[in-house]
Image (cartoon, rainbow, N blue to C red; front, side, top):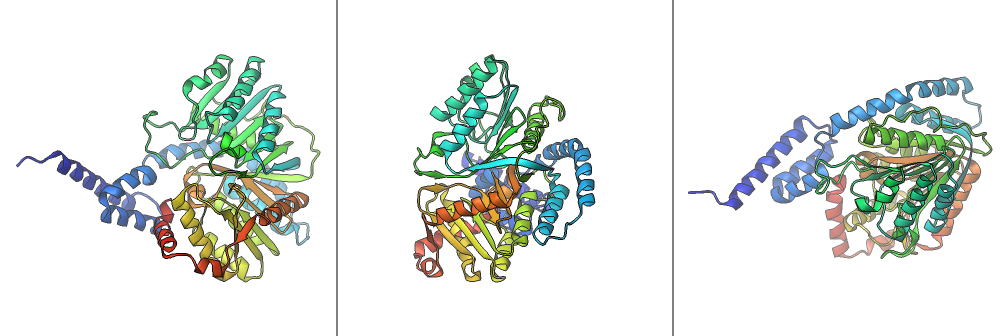
Length: 481
């Protein structure tokens, strides 16, 4: 009897699922819990598992493709890292109790991520989109030599078109303009960049899909938001380019954090951009010369730029967060829209709180991604018994990705406190060693507390059966979100 089309499709899906299971078991190096979730999903829900694996689980070609990128990055940075390691060894520990853990943190990030160190930078932060984009547009319009930008999302709206128009105008003036965007996040059609390209600007896509018009790839996206002007001014943070980041979207007021770095620290963002640009375009931009001027240091901030992603053998973003938690003696304040940590982060936060450290986490009070939101409340609720205090931000949507520790050190960047940011997407944070700046970030957090509601144990215990069910389902899939 002839096989009908439905049976054929089912057999193909089952064959794919069997192949995927064998691949997960024998070839991939997933964490055991993550591997178990995928295997069970493929066995119990073969059709749904097939779809989910295409969207979220595919790792094929990743190892070979990103291993080449990692090797190129290491070769580029090797000499610079060696010089800085020797400088740190010569400097040693100065004996101050405040200084020692910071030097240890610098050493860790230099060793596990080749995160170079830059001193005497001027650093300021932005907590609203209007302030951040006003500063960015001012810097773009003042550019003399070059503009390099790398963004996850660029919306085809008034702000997105304003940024592209400003870049186009500078390209017409002879300024060298390069724009790198993620294939999934970009919303401006190809014709929207035509004027910029005609003016001499260069536009590239990070990790283009094999079939650009159709992509099932959810993992391995360039989640970075970086802008560098003339090699002396750098921007980094949570704001993508779009009207919603000005508070004009369905989530209302948008609370985020970005940082502007003036000085040689901007060169660290420049370095990150060039490594990513060269990977995407094979242009071979040099790491010396015009892109790395040496402005005299006038500020008080020491900066390291930490980058993570599937091209890293280790997990520098997660390890950065773990180290910052571990050095705390007074407080740890965290802001993140997505809190889906792995067991190491959960243990670190629990241990810190049980040790008497004031650990506070601020998350949104409304979901933009419901499954991730319910996983977030589940993990936050689990930490309440250990004394970790969680607050839901009520004045719109909080999208900041920050941590500040003991009025000593802060981190501002693109990496959420979730598994996706730890290992699946390309992320970048700036670690800022500056007591006054850290104190300022603490005060921003305390100002936000006035617009937040604490998720107490009593409040969490009263959640409905429906909410408990949502959390349970979200938690089940948390390792693959």
